[in-house]
Length: 138
Image (cartoon, rainbow, N blue to C red):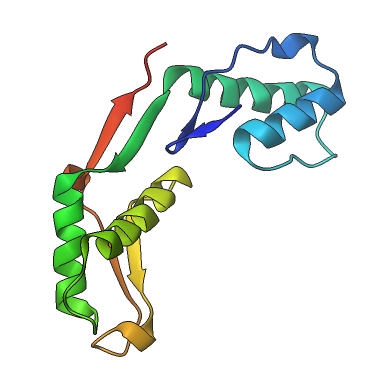
């Protein structure tokens, strides 16, 4: 299972044929965390089926688009001590917002207090118009 954007590739595994240990491993790879050992076998299978269903129904890539890039640039100009930004430097901030999306969070960038003109940590959420979703075609 490979991470793509903030969603994983479609699962083709028949979960009902897996052992408990294999289900534990599958869930950890698919969902990013291991379930507790106190679950019954049927509860574990239920959690895995829920994750598999979500993966099968929502396979897409989400990333910051040109609108979001412009929003991030405006935010940096208004709040970062540096002021002007080269293209490669701005790309790094956009990559941070894309990483946030890949983790399942909103597209967010954060300026630490040492770099902020307000001397406080500043965060910015890219607007919904600044994020695009692209389905992965199989």
